[in-house]
Length: 151
View 1 (cartoon, helix red, strand yellow):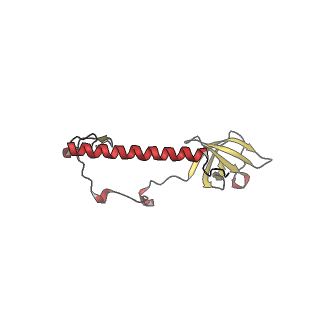
View 2: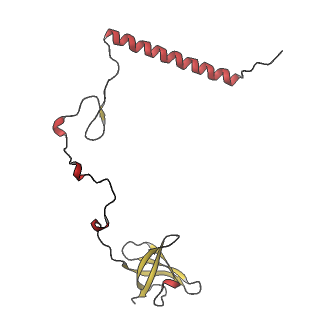
View 3: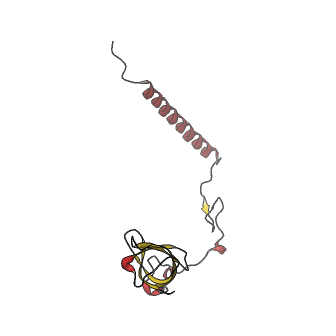
């Protein structure tokens, strides 16, 4: 005698599929009967109000905003429109190891820690020195270059 090709799991999945088909057909028939009798159980349309919420009532046309197509910008702003930033920043040396040749500067305005290498120094610096510097993006993030000692 041969063994059945269908496993228990396959039979269960097929039962679920048949049950879903039957429920779907019953719902379809109920909607058809409701439509014939003039009974509506669901909203046919949903509207979006000015705040982005779905509502069953249409929005008031008096609240409609007029927007000119010319006012819509779909691109990156041009460089001329951006305010120019001073490339020279101020900060204090948080840590600098002269043996290894690197350290970190804390920006005075943003309080962000910026890596500094000995190759980017103009003057000798040490811990807690006040410096001016410029920022360039390195492989691992922002690097301080052209570091000058203020005091």
